[in-house]
Picture 1: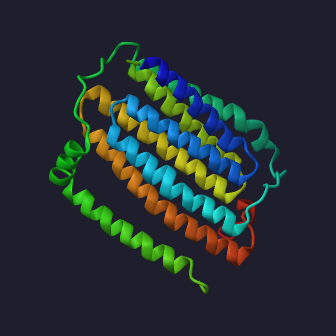
Picture 2: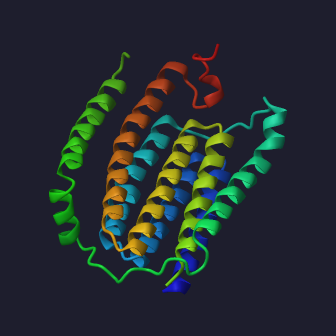
Length: 163
Length: 100
């Protein structure tokens, strides 16, 4: 279990770096699919079967198809490097490293090794999730349906010929 | 079982990579994909905490984040299509009409 976690964590990080490093948007999208699928495996290892399946179906399936579709529709090619700001080019990488170190340090202080033992394995199947969703989280669920309706209408209006 | 700090560390690494890409990249579609990367990092933290606290609520939060991400992707990509039609460019440096 632990070995699998570290293998897929490494795959996720490498693919995430590839998302950012690729010059072609299509290559970034394909790397993002790898990230999403290996994260689904990590979710499985963490005992979240339902979310893992949703991740593959909704994220790697629906959302990424939308992305690839738009990339092909707009014929997005290789991006041109800009030379607008010298300071940004020099400060960018150190600032990112500082952010990473700071948050990692905070986590290390808050949760030192063995601070929190995993709880007993729980039932995270669709039945348990559904019980919680339709009892404790009915209102957020209904609000989500309105949100999706508004998003569909907004997408149709935005993509119309004249704006 | 891996310790919680390693799960959170993976989450932070993905989030920082996404944030760096959001700042560094110039193609608006790639920038959008970096936002998805950050959302996934947060989801991983939610599910890690859910597993270690023995509480299913974290998984439901991840579920809602995925739903909102789907809505956000639909609207965001429609905006990108509208921008491309009006400006004929995908470079975010060309989209500076709100700059003073």
